[in-house]
Length: 165
Image (tube, rainbow, N blue to C red):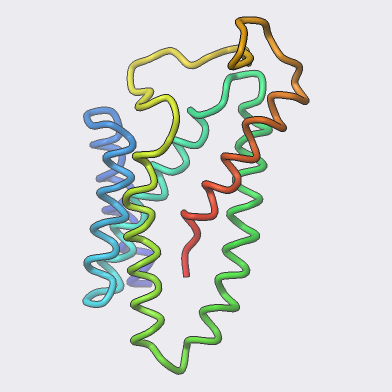
């Protein structure tokens, strides 16, 4: 119950700051704060991670043009769920050594803190999103299959960084 209640302030904070700061900065701040407070307070960790996960959802959908946005989100979400399930196996193997479990979780979130710096396109705050997929070599539209193959492989691998332990 306490963990569920701890998510409410995270939702409020992400709603307040999502448009007033860059989404990548909010994402980094959420993961950095989560990594810093994880060893001290599980409730504070859940609050900080909620800010980060709300930012992940926003940033992920903004990385795809309209024509492939739902497909891109589905691939990234599915990849995240798969690695979330695999993270539970790691969690189970480290449950006997909580210090290592906390260190692994904190270091994973510390890595996720710098990952938004490498996202293409920069912050999309107050900018229109692309409606079509354009080839990087020319200004001609590529097919839906090409855009999914080219763009989603990179997004899915980047999404692995955002997995939790």
